[in-house]
Amino acid sequence: MKKLSRRDMLKVVGVTIPAAVLTACGGAATEAPEEPMEEPSAEEPAAEEPVVEEEPTSAPPEAEPVLITMVESWFGLPQFQEVLEPVNEAISAKMQSEGVPVQVRSMVLDDHESKYPVLYASGADFTMAFDAPWYKMNSLRDQGSLVEIEEMIKQYPNITEGITQRIIDANYMLGHMYGLPIGFFYAGDTGAIWREDLREKYGVDAPTSAEGFRSLEPYLAAIAENEADMMPYGHIPNYGPADPNVTLRRSWGPGAQYTGLLIPDSTTDWTYQNLEDLSEWVDANAMIREWWEKGWINKTDLIVSGSSQTVPFDYFLPGKCASFMENEPNQKAFEIFSSQLADAIPGATCQGEDMSGMRAGKIRGVGLLKQWNFIVFNSSAPVEQTDAAMQFYNWMYGNQDNMDMWLFGIDGTNYIKEDNLRYSEIEGIDNARNYRKQWYVAGVPGRFFRYPVNMPADVEESIKYFSTESNWDFNPYEQFEPDTKALEVELATLTGVWEEASHGLMSGQVPTEEALANFTKVLDDAGRQAYREKLQQQLDDWIANQ
Image 1 (tube, one colour):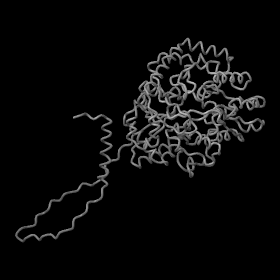
Image 2 (cartoon, rainbow, N blue to C red):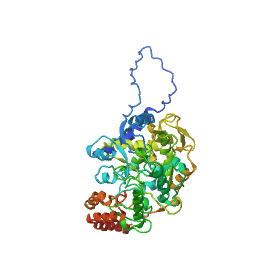
Image 3 (cartoon, helix red, strand yellow):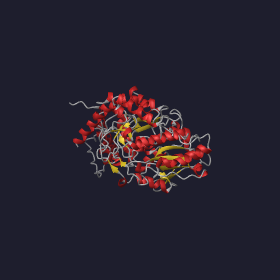
């Protein structure tokens, strides 16, 4: 007899338990009509029928809920366990009452950047997490830390319907699915968020998409002149106007992050080039140098560095800086920062605008089917937990109310549900500590997300723009995934010297020509050109086989 694997056993249990429940809950048997009893003869005493005691009937015991733990993102939600857990309890109770034996809880890390990858190596008890190829996902995948889920997805039709088969098919990595791909927009834009009350106070024109970050300069000059204690622009060198992904909106760089390489236009030519040979990127760095010389940005990397969430929460909301860069800026200015800014600084308002030129029609962006946000599963967790997590997502995708609870909390306590996928806030609630999850970190496709009932027309238009396929060009080879294992020595060497190579360049601290010369020398000395040839060969071979 073939020995059943743990997964086979789970499948057997999954089949037999519903069958037992159906049997126990079946209707009573139809009784036959009574027939007259024959009188016993006088000579023969009537035989006594044996008394059979019937065992009480009952439904089989309910399955013990399987506890699953979500390592929450470091952004897009309140970072307080006491805010998350009451909603988790409500979700778990609803799920269990509907026959899904799963209990969900959250894990919030106080130092996500350092502690998150250690969880996998330490064997910590958790089930799933938000991750992305731009974060830790690829390295964790290469280490064998993530579950391959392509076969599991097939067992859960609500997951396939919610994500869509088209998105699923586009998100295989090296032949496998390593997470639930969470998408909505084909792509987004990037721009600036600024203090609108200060812009109006000092009478400068609003920045525009067509003119880009240069159109922010009159505002920065006004802040520098009139607000002595305020940084005009809070700058993160690796997430600013000179970020290659911001400057070169049609670019693509699989295997090229922190190597000084990039493909400038992923729809026309698939050749890796040196970053410093791309004039748009050089010009963006020169602009940052001008801002540094004029005192419009922080004078050292160390004032504002790391996560893109550092600037808005540590500098913008407390009134220490007057503007910063953000993805989907007009949408996030309204959805995330307006109310929190008003709470922090009475009378303060903010506004955002695309600086890429896409919304102005100056450039067409490249849409993505291969997603940039995922829910991944810990390969060290018991298989029962992974199955339970998939049951959870299947349950959640099956009903808008379920998704609303996971994203917004309890109707009437955390928010008020309105018609047409809108919501309103509860008066007097502390939004900084209110339950709320952004769809992309929570694992819910964006088309199920509710938006504020008072959403401005320009924000609604931006959402339509991002999610309309005809607005975007597409890279026919976006599924290419380099074999970084075969290149791990070269890649580790290049990424190891990235900080040295880029120091002073994207921060504006060093004159642009001098910084570019250092950039070229450090990376080339570390083997960039040899790496470029090997990476290009992988891409060429992959394209030839399509």
